[in-house]
Image (cartoon, rainbow, N blue to C red; front, side, top):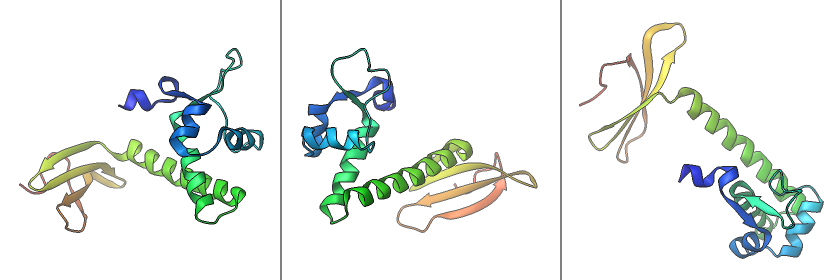
Length: 145
């Protein structure tokens, strides 16, 4: 699924985006003209616009904000802010997630070494409906059995 959602592997036509989001092709062309969305890079040689999965999600979010009363420019700004937060979370996960183990009724997530604390890793313990616990421990010792 991850490969399918990568930009190069999942391209949609403007009609596909319009059907999936309920945003008219005319409106999508206007949004493109305003610079709010853009077709996939490298389409100059193609006759038809192709959009990435990311653009599908972006259009959907913009339209959702517009439907709740935001102006188009405010909806685009909120969507961009949401994207920045999402990128920060993805970076955090990419940088810090070093392991995940299934434990009774949950997960033990290794968030990697802690600065200035030799041989210690920070673990997030998620169990059922309990609050997430953060635990500092030696890397290879299970937190709970």
